[in-house]
Image (cartoon, rainbow, N blue to C red; front, top):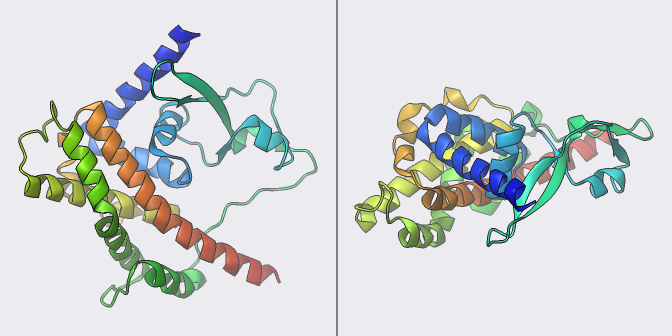
Length: 253
């Protein structure tokens, strides 16, 4: 069992180094992570490594119980690492594509629509701050993501300083380190938010927006970056999702 666990630990480390070694791989990871925004970074990383097309994952007990769905015969679980301190342990989740309904009930994920943009804009600004100059909703979402990064940057910057030895970030002074992290975070959080909202984020970002990504080149600094992107984007996407779900309920009523 330990050998199997170690293989998944190696998979996680190799995947982390791969996604920051090429910005297109990073964008691919962010796209998967945007659908799994309720999961922490390390779980998003493991799901991406094994099932990059996953859209909604849960443990067997949740599918079989609360969700009233069963796992199809032959479906392979997605292994997640728990307890990052040795000895590691594994737990498994299944994507919705691995399940069928017991009673013909469909599970639908919330979807952003043009008619939701105004109420979602108001909700986001109430939570993160007013935006006055955005041309359209995608640009507002980019600005809101920037606000969220500014509000939550300090803790991750402290963590990054602790683990930056041995990475390309090691020789940066405090000002440059903050700028490298902030720039990469703002682009990454906004990319995830746009992706989950159903917009094409590549229309708004290119390689230059992730020019410092490659300096995050050790597992330790990537973990800080990944956790920051995951945590902060979840705040933005959850706020957006809650408003959309309320609008969907209103439409049904």
